[in-house]
Amino acid sequence: MDQSVHNYRMTQGRPIEFDSQQALLAAMNVFWQQGYESTSLEDLLETMAISRSSFYQAFGSKHELFERCLALFRETQVRRMRTALTKASSGIAFLRSALQATAAEAGLTHAPKGCLIMNTATEFAGRDSTVADLVADGANDFSQVFRDAVLRAQQEGDIAPDRSADVLARYMVTAITGLKTMVKAGVPRASILEVADVALSALR
Amino acid sequence: MDQSVHNYRMTQGRPIEFDSQQALLAAMNVFWQQGYESTSLEDLLETMAISRSSFYQAFGSKHELFERCLALFRETQVRRMRTALTKASSGIAFLRSALQATAAEAGLTHAPKGCLIMNTATEFAGRDSTVADLVADGANDFSQVFRDAVLRAQQEGDIAPDRSADVLARYMVTAITGLKTMVKAGVPRASILEVADVALSALR
DNA sequence: TTAGATATGGACCAAACAGTCCATAAACGA
DNA sequence: TCGTTTATGGACTGTTTGGTCCATATCTAA
Image 1 (cartoon, each protein chain N blue to C red):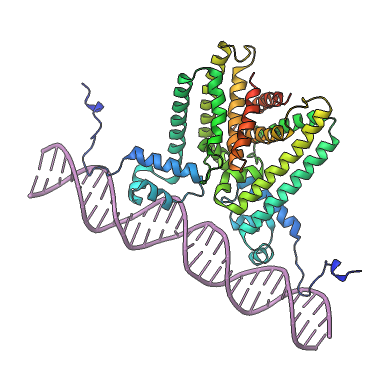
Image 2 (spheres, each protein chain N blue to C red):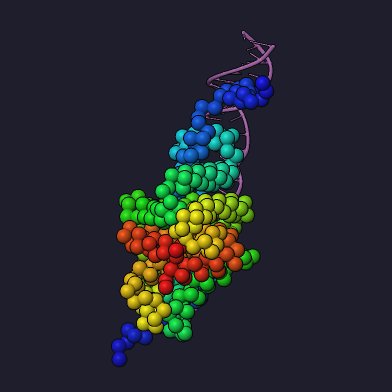
């Protein structure tokens, strides 16, 4: 058996006192809620519950951490979506509930978070090519899931087979992004659901 | 005749050396391009071409200036949209070109700016009630213009008369916002136009 | 000419920023 | 136990942040 497989203790020295994955998750949530610029290192250290030294030791810099958060967000969301699609009663049911789910954050007391990838796109994708790539990758991944959902809906007879699954998938990402932004703009839940209905009608 | 109407020189003292409206416009463009947090006072002073003293004398604070920029943006855009609607050959033609216009910023070398109001919604509308109100007002104004366009399209027979003009108007704002975000996410122009077509199809 | 009022340039400020450094703590193998 | 290695707390740094202050410049009205 290859010795290098056992990596839970690769080196000697004082062991890390915090859960790296958990800290990353906490950081992701802060960035998700506040964005990159509005999140200070102080904010991060507090919610990650680690010291400055550990932070730089483990994550290198604020920017590097952010990149890892973007990747984590993308993986987490795509996995969530894929299982939801698998469990859905039909392709169109999945697409409908994806649109309607945007209303979940509407009218709540705390500020809506939206989608970290799209928040990042509007915050500074255009000024940072590394981040821009991660954003584009994320958008493509989301699109892929919707593409599979559209293909399934077409097989199930709910969407005309001659329509481009690729285009409809990107339309889904567009509509959901728009709806989430509307929620952030303060549009009430009832209106969000009405608009989601109109958005859905473009698929059939 | 009331003397107070003549306000081009209301008080005595050294006259202002810069054009206040022009400085405001310059500031608006910086915020539009970079967002609030990423725009430093240094950035503002440079592009507004005024001194620190003049800045605080004339605009009070960065935040106050930002609020005025949001208002200016809203007024400017609504006026632009209203004249475009008036000049449009039909209601539906206006709606179509509004959707397609989002592709204008796609694939360019410089970073796309999107819509200042919606950028602000995603950046920090949830954390600042004053800004949140201005964002909501802006979104409503945009919606009103689209509502009139939908009503016209209904009279012209391009949109079924039984559909809610209010809901379709909010759908338009949603779709355009989504499309602009897609542009920021790096989706190519051709795809934007395809998605815009799908979005348009929900109106008929 | 002068008194009053406003505008401006530039020095200045405290706080916050991301990031570095080092002494010390805590693990390991030998 | 001891030498090596890694992790951590906390002091520290240089820069940037938004904002203030004051001496001076430039106007109007008297």
